[in-house]
Image 1: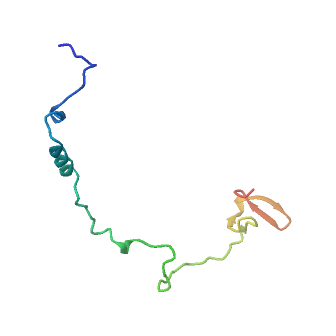
Image 2: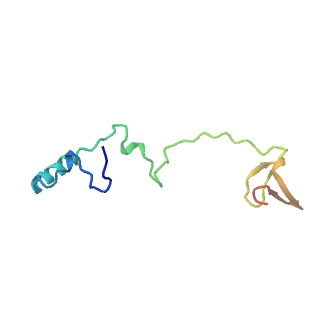
Length: 99
């Protein structure tokens, strides 16, 4: 059977000529759901706002002093291992990232 590809395609739901405007509006309203799915675990308590009051929180951080094989970059002020030293001019120590 030959197919005419230039002919407009139609299926059972495309019977626009026989449907009234009220029926089309009713179908559109049925297709749109006003019910919103809400996840019970997704509450406002799970979000942290910037500038939130964290005065009651206590952080536990173990601070290790700078080791003998480490240096402080004079550009970014991060403590780096000696293998990351890129340039040394007098007292100026610069890491590979800042060089």
